[in-house]
Image (cartoon, rainbow, N blue to C red; front, top):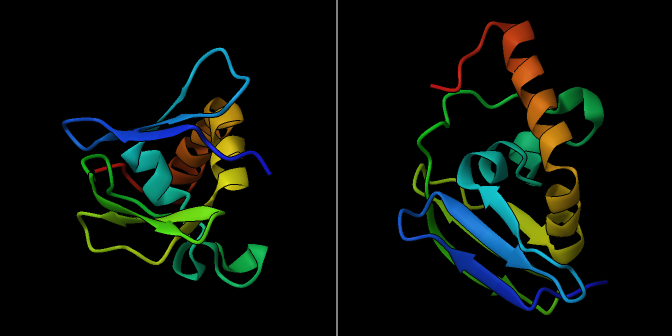
Length: 117
């Protein structure tokens, strides 16, 4: 498990920057991406078939970040969603796979006739 050396939320609350040791650059993760890919049961369901495509979060912002043990943070969003526990490993994955996961999300929205809002 790689523990980040820094977590920083932008002034407009729409981006969280995560820095991991040994990386040449930090990962900038948009609040919208974090919200729609939240690891919560509400979004992920209890199996891949139950996963929910969350529309309308273009303008979501991060309200609060709270440590959860030594392995994760709980992110509260301004739409009230606060049940996702983002482990260091999951944040690392999101940083590395941001482009692919974002495109997959956009493709899901299009396929289901949904909008980012």
